[in-house]
Image (cartoon, rainbow, N blue to C red):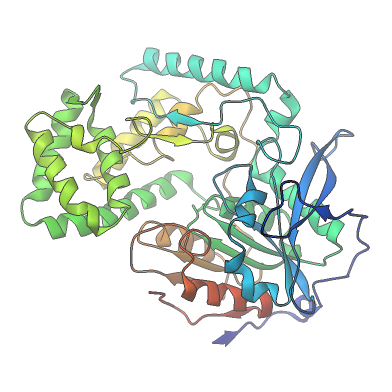
Length: 451
């Protein structure tokens, strides 16, 4: 194992460096088998606002002599982070030997923090790419109406639901705890919050672990979309190689056929982009789904795409969560640019194209949004201490594009399917590496592999 070599300034103990605010720790509401403490913390709704909102913070106390704390966000993005921590305390057993583990229910979402926006936080269907400007304008008007219904609840809060605002909330929690620096574990979209904090407060980062996250620190967003398209193409290549000669040609012909005329499937129809997205979702579940997908392709060639219908929920591709945070965190584009980008991605990745959310879902569901992008992607400071990341077939590459920005960082690779190795899959090898990193700032070797 490789010990981190950091400037002497960063060797100062990370705790008890600032006077803590008075946090009134009480048993968390609804506490059951897992004993957790909760406290309320008032934070400004905007950096220069006199108005505050209340965050509910939860704590799993250290089981041994306390040396500090670590903050966790499990992604989503979603609000009920305290419930998520309560459901998986065992993955933190090594860390808790010397550290408190804390999380909070983020601003605006349903949960124990307040107030919550009155929005539809459920599944949001991804629309088809519009054929012309008129179709795009109709989408934008529908998005605006949906967002306005949500925004009416609390316009100032709605406009500050971005991950940059969450980063300022993290800083407020750090100050309230009296910690000199932050240890942060961000899985999935939680890694976007960690990147936002690292950009705003690089001198306050002690350790930052990101797991299966998107690269929200790209210097050029269009190039990042190109990179994601290539990542997805490499992922699907495993299936096509397994399926044998001729499968790729059949798959591309099916996509082109569905692009000309959507193929019936149960009570809906699928165009080429929808087939690509649903195939990718199926392949994410691992090699056990490869044979059923090949059968679904054969049936679709004969005119029945029902084999692509998901086993639960809406039959069409989409993303849960309403999109409030995502629309404030990512660049937007008009019809012409969206169409050009989609066409470029189809050339780069003929098997998967522009079927992934950052190139398809967000441009089409955030068009017409009533609040501006307030936390766009931008590079991480190179002065950060070394980061640690981890990822699977699906997300190792974008996670590594985050960690590679900071000298000395490491990224653990899992050579298999899945998502969220630390908190979702509870990979024992990853948990061991993360625990040593958070507690002792001890990094794994370069090119570490976890089974």
